Amino acid sequence: MNANKVLLVTLAAFYAVMWLGGIGHYALYGGPPQNAPWAAPLFLLLAGLIVLLTSGRKEWLPLCLAALLGFLSEVLGVRYDFIFSAYRYTDALSPHLLGVPLVMFSAWMTLVAYVRQMLLSLRLPRWVEILCAALWMTAIDLVIDPLAANQLGYWRWTEAGWYYGVPWHNFAGWFVVSALIFLFIRRTETVNIWARYVGLTIVAFFTAIALAYRILPVAGIGLFLCLIHFAILQTSHRIARKRL
Image (cartoon, rainbow, N blue to C red):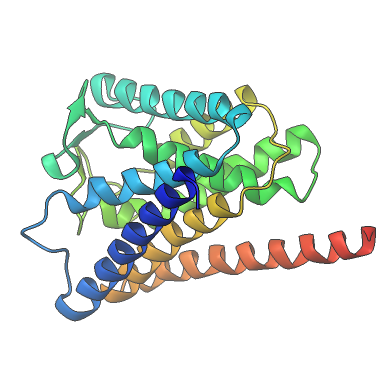
């Protein structure tokens, strides 16, 4: 194997261990490990590195632009209390830049790459693709935020909202920011299986945590998103067979 493949296998192995270990810890002990504050930032960083390493160089610019736009929206949200409603990050995802964890670059890039890849095979009209992408990103946020802002303690809302403490304004912000990101970055033409399954593991991870905490509505949304993932893949495989 060449150096890139060795690096990819190494990163994937570490990521798989952390994914399984994280879910196992929640299942056995009902919470995150208390003596490993580095685990959550490293987990998200590994996800982003795998996506970037497996993407062609032509994809680096749109992915980095997506990461930058997502991060800047978080900076505006934290500093000026709009876009996502008023909130503040804790030290759980340190280090920070301008009040936002640096690893959020990786988180935004990973989710955007995932949704972008999943919509690739559907060949939707551009405006429909942007709308679907924004809705998908917002649906993922419905799974992540109730846990990240409560049990995991990644950030705290200034005022609690109606959805497990999350304000509705946050989801409106996620939809608008996601739509703008997909408006600014071009449609990908290159299939990246790694990006598809890393994104799926993120959704599955938070779904499993929701099940561990018995937050069944959140877990139900996560399971539904996983089913959509496999339904789209099945559809794309049928389309590919017909073309052959």
